[in-house]
Image 1 (cartoon, one colour):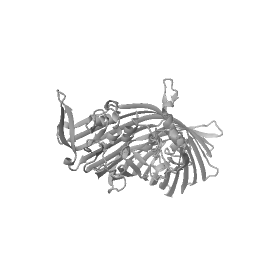
Image 2: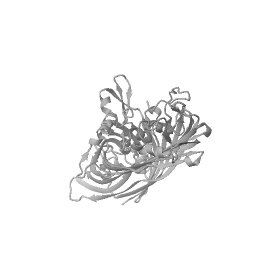
Image 3: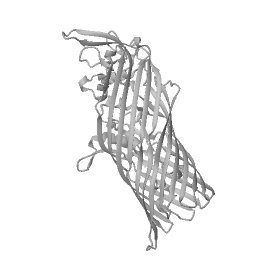
Image 4: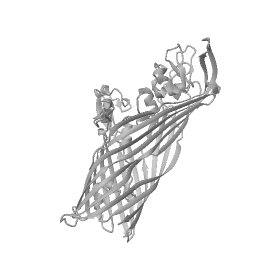
Length: 568
């Protein structure tokens, strides 16, 4: 089964929320899609038991103590994002998908590792200290969808969301649309009944409907990245046992842009009457036709965090390596800002409207999951290696809180959202495998594969009804559903990645690696607006029974990375 990610614009219009925080924001900021050096990426990032590479420090801080030489690496690369998006105005019949491709230059790794000999120790061979920056996620995704709709409209959705609310009491989103002439009141003055500017009201003023065909277009764009800076300490015990520590200081920047536009195929089918009063109080009625409208939402988040990580590598035999690490939850300080825009055009241009909301801002603390890694590797010096990793990430511990002036974290205002996180977030499992073959000492051929399971759960209540995070509205009445949740199940979404690469090691200090990776993400179902707020009708007042427009978004990413390094 697939859940539907409803537009953030819609979410805020219905909930009148102060910010954009929900369970999925916590998951987005917590999720890792590891980069690092070209060698670690080419091996599928199955490097927990291997070490010896600055990309491996992200997974196991003990890995930096494997080699006896200083290292400096820098890894530039290109990211190619490809997205296919199909649109269904009725939520069922999809048009042909539209493909969007975007390319971005990236620098997913730079690091320096220093080695210090311990001549006076009988058991400790050397210690290492270094600073390594490895990118742990990249959010680049651009999607565009188009279709026609003669049943529902975005402006009608806004009007339905405003029902019963006086204009002065509207939140940022609704007021922005109202101020841009995207919907207006009908019926008795002060009734707070609204119709969209591309809807028509029947003669008795009992309902509104879409009178013609609209061309609709939807864009959903995300960009930004997350990078972990690891301050690493590690130790080599007689070349058979290694242990290390990371103090991690991750930084993230995430932006999301939603744009939805609709235009009349035949403006004459969308008449609208604007009413006003002259100086004498006489009502004036002026007619025109609706042409088009656009609504936008822009959200930016930035954060800095801190975590601790401990890891070990043990060699029970010369060729067999075992590794494990534990990373504590990251405590982020997050700053957000968001804004809405709206514009509307009519045949009579004097009624055109545009508006921009005030800037919304929020600051809070976010605790992300802890991570456990375990790995096993078999190595044949001069010939190659085979490595397998398992990783578990616990999303149920995600927690929002506010920090008071003394630094104490308060979660009273986040209790319901945190309960949703605990109920619908669970364990994510990842398996990674890597193979390296060395046909000659200077050359290494590599391949890797990994998959990651979804951490999101859904529940069945006592009647067998599916309950998801959307069902409870993210911040909704969670206590009502607690009484009925019977059995929990995980969504079966998988993220797959295949990689391959080649490495060159010179007899001197220079080495270079190349990696190519393709990552396939699960299909995302996205609703740019939701028509369930009221009953859509035809021109005769009959219920249409149509669903919301729906988009299916299929994202794939290609990464090409080149690591240049020196041993000192």
